[in-house]
Length: 334
Image 1 (cartoon, rainbow, N blue to C red):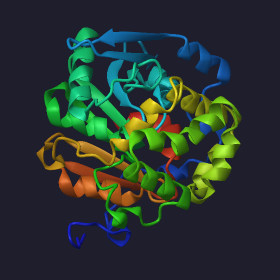
Image 2: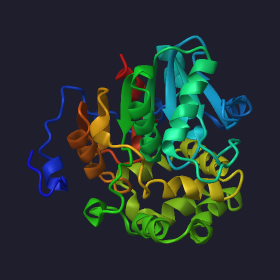
Image 3: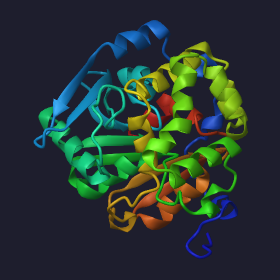
Image 4: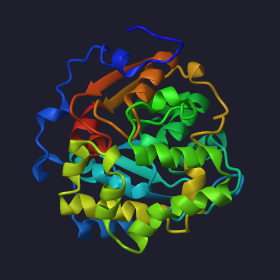
């Protein structure tokens, strides 16, 4: 694979050799192949939450899914909330995994803390694992959970066993060459997040929350971000259980208003406080080749930059479909 000015292009990405894992596109997007849960089960899971106070007095709320006695997996949600992790509940219960899904500051029931940093969050999550009596844990991060996933891999590598990075945002958001193929609406929102101070960015960003907290309509998101959705993504919205989970995911992201979620998005554009080149843990990097929200070049950058990362492209898959195939994801942990 060639590299031009340390930027891997989409053409370069397509030259990455696919591994022997069967492509997830071999699964048709029928409900039986997706790890969906019904609304009643979702609300039952939502009602069971707990919180943790770190030594510094920082409070993090978290939910747990799957098998309570299973192998622990720390879940790093994307631009949403802990609800996204509920897509792993059924397969985790079947395969013997315990999913711990904390919310970042200002999201869900985790209080907002002005100025929080990724390394500070990693310290809090490491303490959470200690408080829960966990030893080594696996970790799964998706989309906007990439920065915090990388932070704990950098700061506390001995805490982690296997790491799965699913279409994760990398520290290249300010480089327009990594926006190739991204839909117009996502490009516009990213530009606002990059250029505006938090009080101003909250105004346009709050639209995402209003669509789900007031209008309660996942279809409005689908229409607004149509240019950023692959065919695979659009099919997901035809499943009522997925549409309901998507709506609840953003309702929890905006439970406290737009400040926490908007700040979280702006961390993508800020210095992360560490270098990916210092991450030595093995990382399975998984990305759908039809992703128009977080382009494949982010995962290619991670493979190029981290010391031990391996990219698995998933033909025909968009951004939203990876985690919805929860069995395929958790089976990668062995």
